[in-house]
Image 1 (cartoon, rainbow, N blue to C red):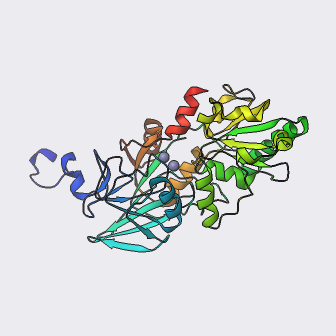
Image 2 (image 1 turned 90 degrees about the vertical axis):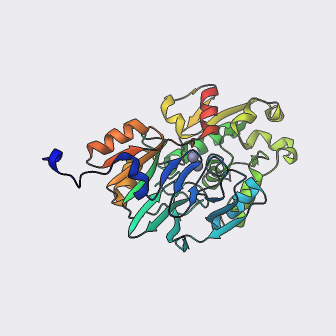
Image 3 (image 1 turned 180 degrees about the vertical axis):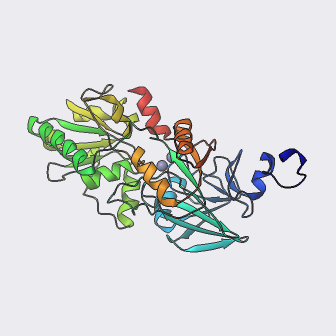
Length: 352
Ligand SMILES: [Zn+2]
Ligand SMILES: [Zn+2]
């Protein structure tokens, strides 16, 4: 029947971007009717930024739109940018496209971007997690026709423990080291992970030293109203207190001379990637704690389901596995190639 019917039939692939609210371009994810990008990796005139991690928020764009809560961290990282802050849930209408930002539960100020035009709703998630985190607003499911999802930990093997379990392990490790009079050095990403660790550990065990890389971010969190325990610069820590200290530093600082001041110590790494490494002695570290700011497999699936989207576009991570699984679930699933990825975490993982 198809051959003798001159009209109708499916749209040709090359016309897809006439209808799609968000498409991929060499610069990044692009909204054609709104003429703006979401988390672009090349310089553009207008950029909506989901959150301040380096792979999503780059310097050099003409105009930024991001959550009001993320403003402090964005400015701490990118300096003097032209930023229009938007409260979660508020709408800005741009060239007939309604744009709003909704909590992604990933780090302070992180957002999913909801775009609506002519009755169609698309949501680009950026990075997200669905588990509770005291340092940022909880992930909010947003109903949409098309959902663009990350897939960093998009394999069924990834299932996180609860925060209570992970922090019980971290506190026990710290307390044991303190009893032995040796510092506890915990490597972690400076934005997001460091603050989540600060908020979760038992600060009564001993003093907490934070590497200078995390301090401007800590300040932005405190100014945004997130309660974090006091932190001490490495240089002002009393020598007698070193053996009870918890030291938070980026993985890169582990290799340098910065750590020498703490003498004999136990070291550990806090990252979702630690899930793959069995029990103790992960890589070069004494301990690994599986703590991630990304959704695990059940989290990704519940988040996708809650959107009600019939079409899902998968970005950075386990793309083929997720696309296949979602297709098997009866959804229209496809992939966007992006340049997102936890480069710091991945680099640290590669080096351990
Ligand atoms: Zn991120
Ligand atoms: Zn990312």
